[in-house]
Image (cartoon, rainbow, N blue to C red; front, side, top):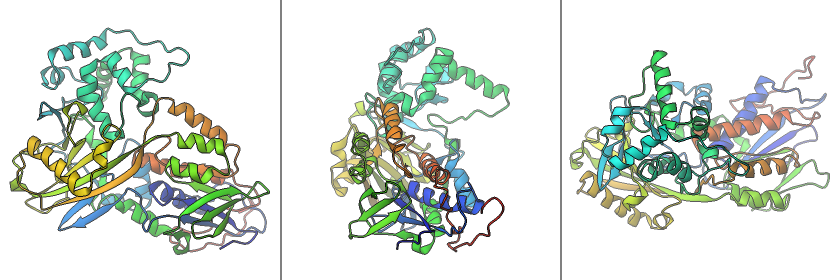
Length: 516
């Protein structure tokens, strides 16, 4: 499928949410006439997406079973990062978006084998409200006094080589050991499944470092922000832990987003079960050759690699060994989700929240558990409940190695101890995601700088995905769309933008005075 000399071909490798967003946005930009990159006599550009597996969507996997709606990967996206929400609306899926249950917006932290409510206004690392923090039994009085010391500690003055700091080091320095072990580690672990001793705060949550720089004290910064919200007349989020009002999903599950994107691509623009073995530059140094496991050579004027960094490294080894080394150095953790369906009467706990997180110091198999049927409507039939546990991560890789049956049994033991559930579930559904969560270790931002420098030497090659500047669905959507935009605006002037519309029909544009 080599296009003519007047056809520009963009190959997107990887059909997860990042690759789908990139391919779709290439089509959007074409229809909007972004950038005058078409020359006289140019025709169209083909967008070809190659996916090694038999399905699109990556970790966005929604399954229906016996009236339950199961999420195998992410169960929501955050509106504060707008890329996913804006994309859903452009796709016409705005009416399918749902918010979290407004009546149970709180979470729990396990301490001493029991669930304790997260203090209202506690945002990942520090409290924004005094009384709920003081009355919480998650921390000892010694721990609370140490956290309060943050109000008086001086800000750290960064020196050369000390701009980056681990989450663990930062929290211990500002708030003490209890704050790290009982709150920061499990809360952040639920997002990044990371070891806080290695996690770069600057690469993951720079706002806390900015708080220290601007306000000296994290707690003081939180209080000031709460007062600004109140004076502006905005209703403060009453949820404990995460700001659950920001979390959204679809009434038919997260796979709605990837399925809709896939349906908008031309039928001949997607090849499943097509593993790419390598990519290299042709002798002229301007065009790429994509080689598949089936022996096919696909010529490409531009390439988007929407893949885990270690897979991209393998493909790029021939083209740029130094770039491949940098990509291969980004570590990954493996995680699994365990969905368990129950009769509501078999769960003694009131499930009066969205779930709980488990500190590593509790020595449990479960990292966290979401009460899915409480968090979002339509996840379980009437009179039933759906729980979703997380297993594995950087701190418990041995748990990921268990087979599905053993993993579900380990989670069930935790649910028996923590929620009092003795009855067996109606079923357990396990999804395992090996090496799926990129770990933003210390020095991650510097590594990204070196990766960008190497990419700048290579024509029309872009990277996107969760390995670089954000792990959530909105981050992946944004990275895919940015890759598409950058590829378009850097296109050689002799080529033209993609000429498919969003319904898969090829479009022939008339040339205007501006060259389109």
